[in-house]
Length: 63
Image (cartoon, rainbow, N blue to C red):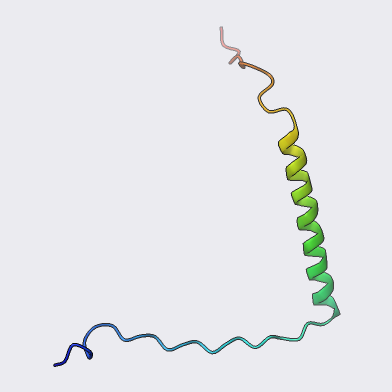
């Protein structure tokens, strides 16, 4: 037995995915997704600039 025959065999390469044609609905959906993501990013930046931990030590309320 030669060393080349033993061990794992390499998997076959998967065929490349064909680029499907997008109709108007797909284009509109992708555009809406991009706009939503931009709005979300803007909100994240806005939230990061807000007050963080400005209230000090919180009391548990137990006596």
